[in-house]
Image (cartoon, rainbow, N blue to C red; front, side):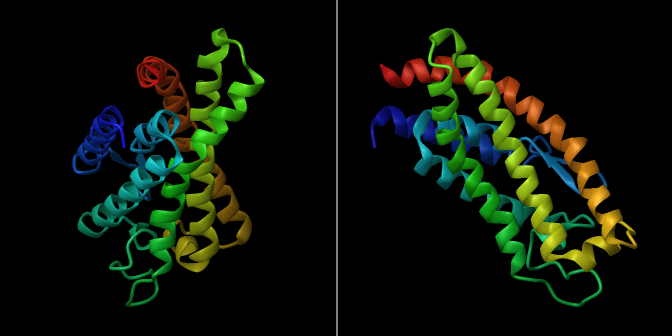
Length: 206
């Protein structure tokens, strides 16, 4: 790895750990926690490539397990196997899937999404547009995978957590999370990716 890439990776890793280990990264919203940790991972994937992005996403997943174990919320059973699933007295290893796989993908996919958008919008003046939509789409995919996995793998426990008495109620609850904090996370990720990534891309090419 080039010294420049190593230095950038270290910076991104430091930002991720800072956000994960302080209130900056996880915002408690009662039932679930909103997060901004995916944003540096998206930017790192675009700048440094999918392998480093996926590795940083894995770190995000590990920090998610740790924070949900140390400071659990009502849905922490879906992110940590150490937290008993509602209605039972034991945790589930499916929590490792939810905590890690979507986070690895949010480090893997942005590189390819950006390449696709950048190919469509090949003019340099549209670089920020490609970056904006990369941040937006990557965050939507992350939110969809996390919430979709929770509602599918922990259907009954999730229904109990949100006091839902039907599949329709669960769908509406997931849709509400997707539209509220999911939309806010996506908009913030899109704005910051378009703002921060261009100078880093320029520096990385030198």
